[in-house]
Amino acid sequence: MKRLLPWVLLLIPIITFAQEDAWVFFADKENVAESIANPISILTQEAIDRKEMHGVVIDERDVPVNESYITQVKQQAGIIVLAKSKWFNCVHVRGSQEAIDALGSLQFVDSIEFADDSLNSLTGSSDGFGFVKDDPQDTNGQQLVDYNYGATENQVTMLSAEFLHQQDFTGAGMIVAVLDSGFPGVDTNAGFARVRDNGRLLDGYDFVDRVDDEFAFSNSSHGTRTASDIVGFIEDQFVGTAPDAFLYCFRTEDVNSENPVEESYWVEAAERADSLGVDVINTSLGYRAYDNPAYSHTYEDMDGQTAFISRGSNIAFEKGMLLVTSAGNSGTGMIAAPADAPGALTVGAVDSNGNYVSFSSIGPSSDGRVKPDVMAKGQNSAVITANGNVDTSSGTSFSSPIMAGAVTSLWQAFPERTNAEIMQFVRESAHLFNNPTAQMGYGIPNFEDAFNEVVLSVEESAFAKAYTVSPNPANSIFQVQFPEGNSQATVIVYDLLGKRVLTKEITNTNNSINVNTLTSGVYIIQIQDSERSTTQKLIKQ
Image (cartoon, rainbow, N blue to C red; front, top):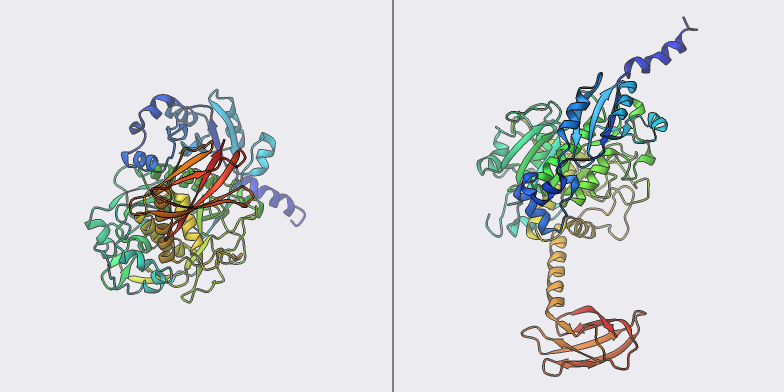
């Protein structure tokens, strides 16, 4: 018997994992030009408005996958289609290696990418994925809004998010999508009555079981608890960080197994969120190790460009959404996808005193970027359970939505700012921004400071626009036009090496500067008045 054991061990993975997972990429789409010319046919008006505000281009990736192609793939022997992605123009399939390889003979198939990276060495493709459970210690408007935060006081005030609420920025008008494992009680319990009664519980969809009729608020309660940290509200007991935001609930995680199709479910949900005009996505999930170890990630894969979900996260960022995600709960182990994505604001966990907690995954990403980005309370975070009770849970699963709600409320205050700008203001407000660490990233943000920095940048931008320089380019003389209410300023001209080459006091009636002695080239003009200064570029011909 012992002599046969090695052969038995060799057979086990073949028997257990005879079915492979893969992405099948299509060569083209139909009606691309027509769809882009008539975007309301493929996107909601909310999505179109958000993209227009932030200068996001509507392109071929917004056009749906050709359903005829999907039907033909479904008709192939031994193939099951589990998910689709318009951004990648592909479907996620399951079948034997031989059956999947045979799909390459279809004229409209461009390439095939197996989840088992060793199979891609034979086909010329590459990728690999994995999952980490993100809940290791679960323990069961008017201006100057003054909430009694109750159980959430520590996690809200740690970020100074109450300052946003006091300025009447509570997420109103903003749309949040939570991608998770289930949402029992969101449609019934008192902790979500505020979002329901005000018509802000928009919809949901189960990408795992493909619920086509009314969304069933069922399955794992993990999503209920994460969503509560954003929109939950119980008078004098519990206040989420964006209690007046709109909410979509999307189930993308199947807690019964760990398989890369969950990444495809997630990408498909993110695509739907984009088409519906969602502003902020929270995802308290992380993918690294699968039931089939051949699909699992290495640290080298955590480069933000390898995992399917991380690549999808980057497209979500390009499309103008702001993705907030948990770092993972592997402690000194690596972050999990999509936390490695450059387009994600990755959140680690601290305790009630703002100290790093041992389960929070550390960075950096494998290509050396700071991860996690920021930190929020993740140990004994207050949550609302499926039955409507206030309880505590631990994990970066909860630091992420606490942060996501705060980001949502900040973005409400400055909707014209892009996702990248909001993320950077949050990072720069964090207490370790100048000295980030592997455990804490840039540290704990201060949303009052972030708010004030955005205000200052807006004022500086307006100030800069108030002073106009013309003509520019200039031959020998240019004039400075003053804003209303200002009559005196100092103009300093620097060359590109930073050397001061000219200084002149001007008034609104004597506002000409002679640059005839300067050589042709590019110069920097600094205009200073009694309150502040601005810089502009001047071209001397």
